[in-house]
Length: 167
Image (cartoon, rainbow, N blue to C red; front, side, top):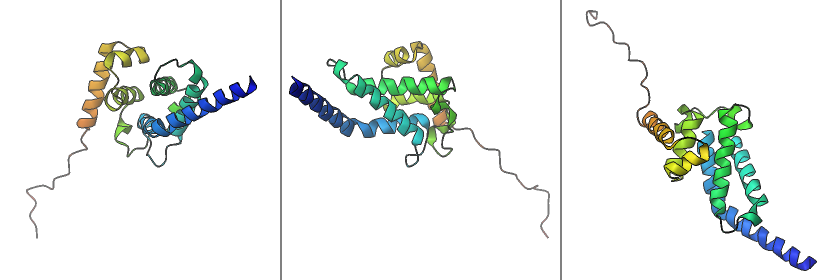
């Protein structure tokens, strides 16, 4: 009996290790996009990923055919949302890397944009996951896309007076 439990635990560990080997990089990239950190210096994204993977591992035996990637992504998104939108969690306290393209977006805009465009989550699924209406998800996604494609312009350059005569 004890040997059976040990072999079941070893099988579970191997399956989870294979999942992390295959999906860990993409999930880290997703977390890095959410936190708007640079890929080389992303401690908040790594903490977020670690928590998502720990949560996925804890419920591994209860997946029953459910996709572990979806489960990890859902936890990643909800944990980021909870921490960022309420500004109480560890993920809301850090500042995005100003050089990151997504840094000028709000946390909600980053989350919706990453889920919809990077992860390919359907509008209705993203809405259900975030507790928003599909119309709100659509509006946030459009606004975020527009802000990325059309960044605010800086001030106009100073033009020297045309009436000045050079000596």
